[in-house]
Image (tube, rainbow, N blue to C red; front, side):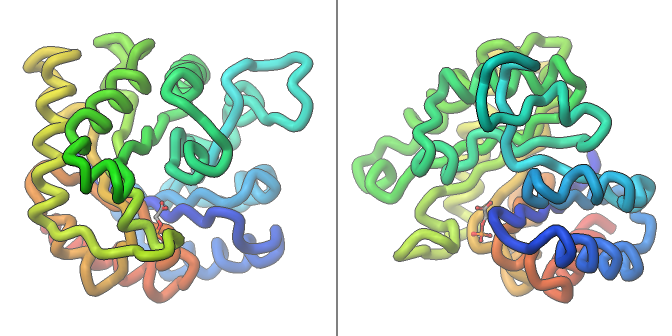
Length: 256
Ligand code: PGA
């Protein structure tokens, strides 16, 4: 299976800065066949970056999109409009869930719309600090997975990526702590078990599972060696070119 290194730029960089970053990244990046390098810039920059991106080396992702294709939905951008512009879209990121009130129903519709429009959804799931403290992690993970994947058929599950991001480990949260590889491994097992329940044993090696939450060059190797982890979703460290390329290098080393 391929490894995925996905940079989530969140609300950072002007269009010009994004273009300069992409230019420098592509210059440094060899053509790694077994590592899919992806960056998710702000929607504003996607159109121009899609003309600049060398798709042999890397791909673009959107950070969010709306599930209806066209219509009276002021302020939204649809998956239909993103078709041909991006290959991936992050869906259900904890910042969307907690700041913008997206629930599992909304996430479900967005995942389905992405698949329908041939854009690979990167479905983010993860428990908050208090959910973990109350022993609710397994239920939260199960509900978010079952909810998000409710409209994804057996034929389409290999077009979906899952990203486990414990909310308490994301660097933007006040008391961000590092998740230990063991903690990540436990949840990966839960995810695999739930996927098997929904899709049966043939799910093996489909729906790659990524980890995200304060990933940086010093901990990337440890997370990438957790059994069942196929890549990383990187926030803060992806904004610093040298850190992002170091993480890609580490993935290459772990892979070979
Ligand atoms: P972080 O963000 O790497 O800055 O913790 C990860 C994410 O929110 O996707």
